[in-house]
Figure 1 (cartoon, rainbow, N blue to C red):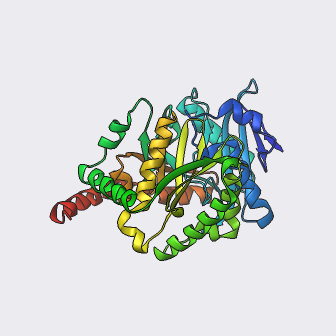
Figure 2 (figure 1 turned 90 degrees about the horizontal axis):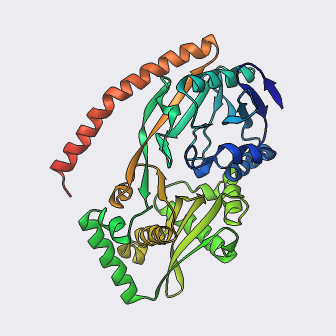
Figure 3 (figure 1 turned 90 degrees about the vertical axis):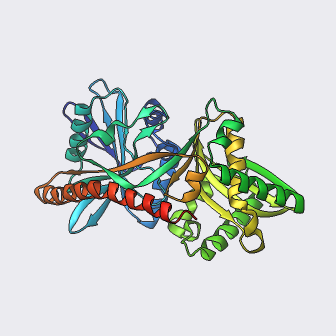
Length: 375
């Protein structure tokens, strides 16, 4: 463990196994998502080390009285001839650093500089896919001058205090009608059963069936299945086996006459649920839209169980809007340390400015396209 002094004491670690107490003292739904939980972070970093995917750098900042005030989970990388610290890794949908919500903007800037000063041989710190808000309020990090709006968004459904009818009526009327009709047709033609298990309650048979269906469905859609990639699959399998600490994996499914036709995997921490990996059968089952049926049943299950939100995570797929999700803006931020890093940062700021100007034009074009092509 390396230390750096000054107003903020920064400790540098290469893992988080021994930092669970600091995590518990700092991290909550008001300043983090399940992807920033200790259990999820520990599984990700454990996956890195043996396969040498990246060299983790964990920065813990403390106030002068020793209280944890910020956590940065980073990986070293080399891009464009520069030495980077990155907060992103493929299994992490949200990559925001974690700050005590009582900190002022000036404190955040000082802590970032203290972290950069504590890590040698680095030109830049890049923070990517940061949500504009958490369950308890806004993310102060995205208001820093170094932050820029991404084109990509996340999508979330608030469940707290809402009835089944309120959640359903937030969806477009034609989508509600089509989904209800397909659900009824499936139930009339087959014995339709929904079920959901969490953590260690998940059956090994379902884990194997989910992996197979996920591989088949992603291949049919021409996508890459992360569960077939050895460097990442262990994280999800550990979560399915209940090895994520307080961050728990869950798996829901719909069966027709005992045959699984759709699975949905996600994680939960506290009162927040995130859905990440869907899989559903195509072919003769496609007219029933089993994947959409499963999303609807799963949302209702967690609403009835008293959870606060259902997060459909990053990605601008149309079905997320149809489920009545609220858009959550995502940001990235770049912080230079060296002269070379500063030059790259200035070019990056130019890109952010151009991106901000083009976004309204792109949205206007998309809206015009929907008007001229309503189908």
